[in-house]
Length: 215
Image 1 (cartoon, one colour):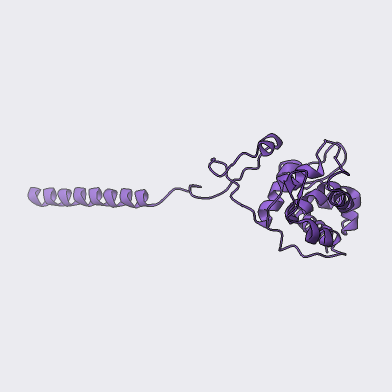
Image 2 (cartoon, one colour; image 1 turned 30 degrees about the horizontal axis):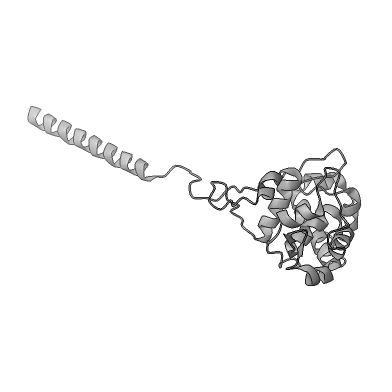
Protein backbone atom coordinates (compact mmCIF):
# COMPACT_ATOMS: atom_id res chain seq x y z
CA UNK A 1 0.00 0.00 0.00
CA UNK A 2 2.82 2.38 0.94
CA UNK A 3 4.65 1.53 -2.27
CA UNK A 4 1.48 2.24 -4.25
CA UNK A 5 1.00 5.61 -2.51
CA UNK A 6 4.67 6.46 -3.04
CA UNK A 7 4.39 5.61 -6.72
CA UNK A 8 1.27 7.75 -7.09
CA UNK A 9 3.00 10.66 -5.32
CA UNK A 10 6.01 10.41 -7.59
CA UNK A 11 3.78 10.33 -10.68
CA UNK A 12 1.85 13.38 -9.45
CA UNK A 13 5.09 15.25 -8.76
CA UNK A 14 6.40 14.45 -12.22
CA UNK A 15 3.12 15.52 -13.78
CA UNK A 16 3.14 18.84 -11.91
CA UNK A 17 6.77 19.48 -12.81
CA UNK A 18 6.19 18.74 -16.48
CA UNK A 19 3.06 20.92 -16.63
CA UNK A 20 4.99 23.78 -15.04
CA UNK A 21 7.77 23.31 -17.54
CA UNK A 22 5.45 23.36 -20.51
CA UNK A 23 3.57 26.32 -19.07
CA UNK A 24 6.75 28.32 -18.65
CA UNK A 25 7.84 27.46 -22.16
CA UNK A 26 4.53 28.61 -23.59
CA UNK A 27 4.81 31.85 -21.71
CA UNK A 28 8.35 32.34 -22.92
CA UNK A 29 7.29 31.85 -26.50
CA UNK A 30 4.43 34.37 -26.24
CA UNK A 31 5.94 37.77 -27.12
CA UNK A 32 5.04 40.88 -25.18
CA UNK A 33 3.79 43.87 -27.23
CA UNK A 34 6.71 45.79 -28.64
CA UNK A 35 7.23 48.64 -31.10
CA UNK A 36 10.62 47.28 -32.14
CA UNK A 37 11.00 47.34 -35.89
CA UNK A 38 8.18 49.79 -36.49
CA UNK A 39 8.96 53.15 -38.13
CA UNK A 40 6.66 55.14 -35.87
CA UNK A 41 8.44 58.47 -35.78
CA UNK A 42 10.08 60.89 -38.14
CA UNK A 43 12.29 63.91 -37.93
CA UNK A 44 11.98 67.29 -39.60
CA UNK A 45 15.07 69.50 -39.37
CA UNK A 46 14.91 72.93 -37.79
CA UNK A 47 15.47 76.08 -39.83
CA UNK A 48 19.08 76.26 -38.61
CA UNK A 49 19.72 72.62 -39.56
CA UNK A 50 18.16 73.08 -42.99
CA UNK A 51 20.28 76.18 -43.61
CA UNK A 52 23.40 74.14 -42.84
CA UNK A 53 22.21 71.49 -45.33
CA UNK A 54 23.04 68.68 -42.89
CA UNK A 55 22.56 65.17 -44.23
CA UNK A 56 20.13 63.36 -41.90
CA UNK A 57 20.08 59.89 -43.44
CA UNK A 58 22.57 58.48 -40.94
CA UNK A 59 20.86 59.77 -37.78
CA UNK A 60 18.48 57.94 -35.48
CA UNK A 61 15.65 60.24 -36.51
CA UNK A 62 15.19 59.62 -40.22
CA UNK A 63 12.10 60.93 -41.95
CA UNK A 64 10.64 57.46 -42.40
CA UNK A 65 7.80 58.81 -44.52
CA UNK A 66 10.46 59.88 -46.97
CA UNK A 67 9.58 62.10 -49.90
CA UNK A 68 6.04 60.77 -50.29
CA UNK A 69 2.99 63.02 -50.35
CA UNK A 70 2.17 61.88 -46.81
CA UNK A 71 5.69 62.89 -45.81
CA UNK A 72 5.08 66.27 -47.45
CA UNK A 73 1.87 66.83 -45.49
CA UNK A 74 3.36 65.73 -42.20
CA UNK A 75 6.44 67.88 -42.67
CA UNK A 76 4.32 70.96 -43.33
CA UNK A 77 2.03 70.12 -40.41
CA UNK A 78 5.04 69.79 -38.14
CA UNK A 79 6.46 73.11 -39.30
CA UNK A 80 3.13 74.92 -38.97
CA UNK A 81 1.96 73.57 -35.62
CA UNK A 82 4.12 70.61 -34.60
CA UNK A 83 1.24 68.49 -35.84
CA UNK A 84 -1.26 69.89 -33.34
CA UNK A 85 -4.82 69.73 -34.68
CA UNK A 86 -6.22 71.75 -31.77
CA UNK A 87 -3.98 74.81 -31.81
CA UNK A 88 -5.04 78.37 -32.69
CA UNK A 89 -2.18 80.85 -32.90
CA UNK A 90 -2.18 84.49 -31.85
CA UNK A 91 -3.24 85.58 -35.34
CA UNK A 92 -6.26 83.27 -35.43
CA UNK A 93 -4.81 80.61 -37.74
CA UNK A 94 -6.26 77.23 -36.89
CA UNK A 95 -5.35 73.59 -36.69
CA UNK A 96 -2.50 71.41 -37.82
CA UNK A 97 -1.94 73.33 -41.06
CA UNK A 98 -2.80 76.79 -39.66
CA UNK A 99 -5.68 77.83 -41.90
CA UNK A 100 -7.31 81.24 -41.79
CA UNK A 101 -11.10 81.57 -41.84
CA UNK A 102 -11.11 83.16 -45.30
CA UNK A 103 -9.17 80.25 -46.81
CA UNK A 104 -11.47 77.72 -45.15
CA UNK A 105 -14.55 79.43 -46.54
CA UNK A 106 -12.97 79.46 -50.00
CA UNK A 107 -12.71 75.64 -49.91
CA UNK A 108 -16.20 75.16 -48.47
CA UNK A 109 -15.70 75.06 -44.70
CA UNK A 110 -17.83 77.56 -42.79
CA UNK A 111 -17.95 76.05 -39.31
CA UNK A 112 -14.66 76.73 -37.52
CA UNK A 113 -15.66 74.77 -34.41
CA UNK A 114 -16.38 71.68 -36.45
CA UNK A 115 -13.11 72.16 -38.33
CA UNK A 116 -11.13 72.25 -35.09
CA UNK A 117 -12.77 69.08 -33.77
CA UNK A 118 -12.54 67.02 -36.96
CA UNK A 119 -9.02 65.83 -37.83
CA UNK A 120 -10.19 64.21 -41.08
CA UNK A 121 -11.74 67.49 -42.16
CA UNK A 122 -8.41 69.24 -41.56
CA UNK A 123 -6.63 66.71 -43.75
CA UNK A 124 -9.25 67.13 -46.49
CA UNK A 125 -8.85 70.89 -46.24
CA UNK A 126 -5.12 70.60 -46.86
CA UNK A 127 -5.69 68.39 -49.90
CA UNK A 128 -8.31 70.72 -51.37
CA UNK A 129 -6.26 73.86 -50.83
CA UNK A 130 -3.15 72.24 -52.31
CA UNK A 131 -5.15 71.06 -55.32
CA UNK A 132 -6.49 74.59 -55.88
CA UNK A 133 -3.00 76.10 -55.57
CA UNK A 134 -1.62 73.56 -58.00
CA UNK A 135 -4.17 74.67 -60.60
CA UNK A 136 -3.38 78.36 -60.06
CA UNK A 137 0.37 77.70 -60.32
CA UNK A 138 0.27 75.03 -63.03
CA UNK A 139 2.03 77.19 -65.66
CA UNK A 140 4.65 78.36 -63.18
CA UNK A 141 5.30 74.76 -62.17
CA UNK A 142 5.91 73.86 -65.82
CA UNK A 143 8.10 76.92 -66.34
CA UNK A 144 10.25 77.08 -63.21
CA UNK A 145 10.69 73.55 -61.84
CA UNK A 146 14.35 72.64 -62.21
CA UNK A 147 15.56 76.24 -62.25
CA UNK A 148 17.47 77.91 -59.43
CA UNK A 149 16.26 81.10 -57.75
CA UNK A 150 18.46 82.72 -55.13
CA UNK A 151 20.53 79.53 -55.05
CA UNK A 152 17.52 77.27 -54.35
CA UNK A 153 16.40 74.61 -56.81
CA UNK A 154 12.71 75.03 -57.58
CA UNK A 155 10.54 71.90 -57.25
CA UNK A 156 6.81 71.36 -57.48
CA UNK A 157 6.50 70.48 -53.80
CA UNK A 158 8.49 73.55 -52.83
CA UNK A 159 6.16 75.74 -54.89
CA UNK A 160 3.05 74.16 -53.32
CA UNK A 161 4.48 74.52 -49.82
CA UNK A 162 5.32 78.17 -50.48
CA UNK A 163 1.74 78.70 -51.70
CA UNK A 164 0.47 77.26 -48.43
CA UNK A 165 2.61 79.80 -46.60
CA UNK A 166 2.14 82.90 -48.73
CA UNK A 167 -0.72 82.28 -51.14
CA UNK A 168 -0.43 81.35 -54.80
CA UNK A 169 -0.38 84.98 -55.96
CA UNK A 170 2.69 85.87 -53.92
CA UNK A 171 4.47 82.74 -55.13
CA UNK A 172 3.81 83.78 -58.73
CA UNK A 173 5.33 87.20 -58.07
CA UNK A 174 8.37 85.62 -56.42
CA UNK A 175 9.03 83.18 -59.24
CA UNK A 176 8.38 85.59 -62.09
CA UNK A 177 10.59 88.27 -60.55
CA UNK A 178 13.46 85.83 -60.12
CA UNK A 179 13.14 86.09 -56.34
CA UNK A 180 13.26 89.88 -56.21
CA UNK A 181 9.64 90.31 -55.06
CA UNK A 182 9.68 88.55 -51.72
CA UNK A 183 7.23 87.74 -48.96
CA UNK A 184 7.51 86.87 -45.30
CA UNK A 185 4.77 86.00 -42.83
CA UNK A 186 4.27 87.46 -39.36
CA UNK A 187 7.02 85.20 -38.01
CA UNK A 188 9.52 86.20 -40.71
CA UNK A 189 9.29 82.96 -42.70
CA UNK A 190 9.97 83.52 -46.40
CA UNK A 191 8.92 81.94 -49.67
CA UNK A 192 12.56 81.12 -50.40
CA UNK A 193 12.85 79.22 -47.15
CA UNK A 194 9.77 77.09 -47.90
CA UNK A 195 10.99 76.43 -51.44
CA UNK A 196 14.15 75.00 -49.94
CA UNK A 197 12.74 73.22 -46.89
CA UNK A 198 10.01 71.34 -48.74
CA UNK A 199 11.77 70.60 -52.01
CA UNK A 200 11.75 67.24 -53.76
CA UNK A 201 8.59 65.64 -52.35
CA UNK A 202 6.32 63.61 -54.63
CA UNK A 203 3.14 65.68 -55.00
CA UNK A 204 2.02 64.07 -58.25
CA UNK A 205 -1.03 62.52 -56.56
CA UNK A 206 -2.54 65.99 -56.11
CA UNK A 207 -4.48 66.94 -59.24
CA UNK A 208 -4.91 70.60 -60.23
CA UNK A 209 -8.49 71.69 -59.54
CA UNK A 210 -9.61 75.28 -59.96
CA UNK A 211 -12.71 74.81 -57.77
CA UNK A 212 -11.48 72.25 -55.24
CA UNK A 213 -13.66 72.17 -52.13
CA UNK A 214 -14.17 69.95 -49.11
CA UNK A 215 -17.53 68.24 -49.58
